[in-house]
Every structure is written in C-alpha cells, then in structure tokens.
Length: 343
Image 1 (tube, one colour):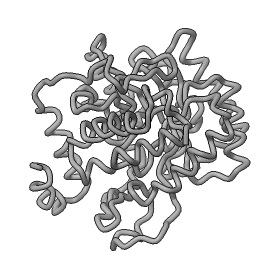
Image 2 (cartoon, one colour):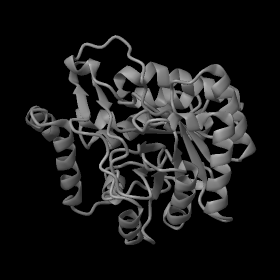
Image 3 (tube, one colour):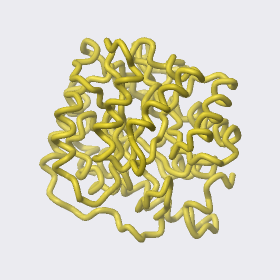
Image 4 (cartoon, helix red, strand yellow):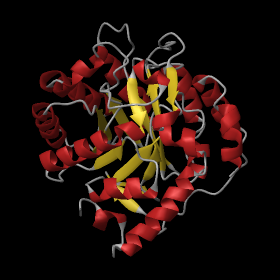
C-alpha cells in the first residue's frame, strides 16, 4: 500500500535514478527473516534446496550489493550481476525506460558494473550466510576473447556462488548473442566448466527468447550433453509486440508484461526440446501468482521476475508466494515439483 502511494513520485524520476533509490532503500532495510526452508513451496533444483521457487532475476542487483535484502523480501533466491572481469560503464544514458501503459521496461544498459574485483570483495563478506545467491557472469564489451572472460569469471565466482549463470543472451552487447551458436556455445561452456572445477556450483545458461527452432534444439542438446544445472528461459526480447507507451520506439531489450506470452512459449519449446531432462527457470513477464503458476505448469522448476517489482513494489515476492500456496492446493498438488510441466 505504501509503495502505491509513493510510486507516482518515483515515476517522475528517471528510471535509472529511481532504481538507484530502490537499491539504497534495500541497503537501509532492517534485518528480517528469510523464507522458511521447509515451507510448503520448498523445492530442490540442481542439487540446491530452494525455500520457494520465486527468484529475483539478474539485472536488479548488478554488483551484488543487496542479495540478502532481496532474500528477506521473501524471494527464494537472488541472482546478482551480470558481472564482467573489468569494470565498465555500459551504454550512454538514458538507457532504461518505463513503458507504464504496457507495464513493461526497455533497457540497453550494456553490462554496466563495477567489475569482478569489487564484486569478489563484496560477496566474500557474505560467505557462510544462508540463502541461495546465484552469480550471473558476462564478458566485457571490448574483450578480444569473450570465452576467456567467461572462464575467468567462472574461476573467480565459483567459490562465492550457489550457482553460476552464463549470460550469452543480452541484446545490449554487440555480438554477444552469437555465442548461442552451437559451436561457439559448446566451446564457451567447456571453458566455463573447466574453470569452475570439480565440485563447483552448478552452471545455468540464460538464453534469448528470439531463437529459431533449430537454435532451441541445438541448445537443448548442448545443455543435456554438458549436464547443465538449468536453462534460464528467457532474457529480454528485441521483438516489439503492439505497445502503447511513448517509449516503445527505444532500442534495447523489452521485458515485463509484453514479454509474457513469448517467454511462456519459449519455455514450452525448451520443455519439449529437453524432454524434461534439464531443469528450466521461467522468466519474462511474471507479475502475479497466476503468471508464476502458469509458468510452473508449463514446465518451469523455478521462476524469476524483475520488471514487475517496479510496478508492484517490494511486497511482490510475498504476495506471489502466498498466492502460489493457494493455487497449488487448489489444483491438488502437494509440492511445486509435482506441478512442474503438468499443464
């Protein structure tokens, strides 16, 4: 309720400035309880025990500043990053745009972050704390060897991460999505898995929604062959469905409600292509318990959101998880795992 009163004032600010305020507010948030580890929504994916299936997607906490605060908001896990080996400023501002009429967002941030050294120092300070925190890794824009960048990040972040998320699907770093090509992706994942080392955290792969059927089949084969911990489906889209906002013409990746149907279909496509052999994390346009439940029924073992919090506020995680409990019981399931892919 308080956020709904504050939102009109926040929306008068530049979207990136408002996001900075939200990070500052989370840093100042008093200590609170984590979601119960043995609650009705508890589930296990890639050997990790999640208190509930709802996570904060990468992009919100690019530098790993507030993962524990996000967990205290009720998220079952938090994914920080994308983090690159060297600091980079990203693309020129403005680069983050609300599409209020569409409940969407367009961003062309360009992997702006403080780099690996600062992130390692920050994340090392939370070592030993409870809660699942994934680290999303990327390559520097001007890198001469992007596969080497990912390997470097895997080596540095593996000791600090519950899981590593390999992001080759952002549309805002030129040429990055080409790494989803079968041969390039195979070589990159081999480098990441080797750098992670034996006994390291599971490796997840984040893919774009703008894929052809042959690409989906190839990525599914690679994910199975490399025994990836999960596929994150999906990143933002460069496509443009009909939009009402004046910002609809901005370049960048589109997220939020306008992405929902495409992301849902891509999840179904990957469920079919993998035959359920690889866990899936559904992300894109999830704003309600019903959205999350539909994604789970379509084959998502876990779900994530980000853009929806800008519209609904910090209470969204607890609202969605409470709703998921009701929906799970309404439909006669005793666990999230039992409901996955049951549509």
